[in-house]
Amino acid sequence: MVMTMNTILHPGHNMGDPSFPNAPDDWKRDEAEKEAEAMGLEIIDDHWEVIRVLQGSYAEDRTPPLRRLHDALEARFGKKGGLAYLYQILPGGPIYQGARLAGYSPPADSMQLSFGSVS
Image (tube, rainbow, N blue to C red):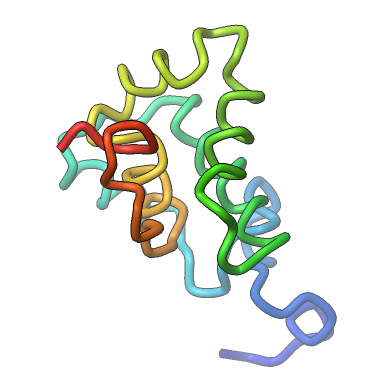
């Protein structure tokens, strides 16, 4: 990785894509698209918004509590149906699949039905 003033001042944040200011340094949009394809997802704008919400949560806390991720997604997508809507676009779990698309390992408990996965 090339050290720039931005990477020194903002370690752990991807300065390459201004649409995703809180992305991990090694995260790339095209890799998220490939991951989505491997999951059988056709990525839409709301997937990108899930990614932004989760990346923002991880930027605040490298190991955010599962409840905080749940609440952040519910708050952002409440008008569209909240987590019920997100399960429609991320059937493997909004937190589980969303974290993978956002460039993070899914939280350990995100496979639980109540928090992130129907698998």
